[in-house]
Length: 184
Image 1 (tube, one colour):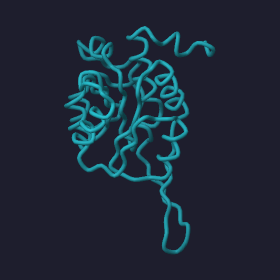
Image 2 (image 1 turned 45 degrees about the horizontal axis):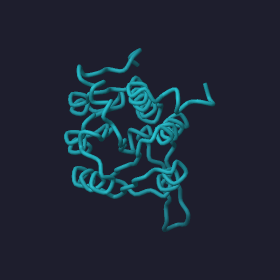
Image 3 (image 1 turned 180 degrees about the vertical axis):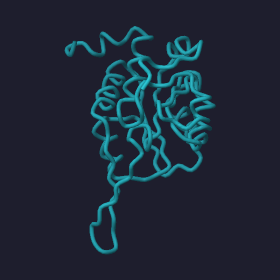
């Protein structure tokens, strides 16, 4: 694991403009493992494990006035519950074309693409990563994603990568101390 995030030369300038943080789920907010548990002989439920560190990071981002959300290819009740608990502004599940969903969220949020940050880890995330102002990846993202990212977290997906990104954005914007007030 790198000792510090990997930053593109203009990552800080890009981070200063961010008003919206969007995350892929499997491989970013989770470690990518998908658990299936039987409810009956014919029905399974999909369960995901989420990092508490990322959850607190999302809460801090919201405290700092940033919008948050997820765009994911899979559909999961576990994710719906987690997004509801974290009061995420945008939850898009079952999305085949993430670039189109990204554009829709921008319109709904009233945010320009340059003011949006997306974190993804795999090929399906490339359209939204190419379109956003700050493209981010967990440390264990696929090579094509790492090559495109302006910010690569120290940690892998599901183990604090989203928190690394959120702290970077909030500290760059000078919002970290106010958002974390009461905890520090």
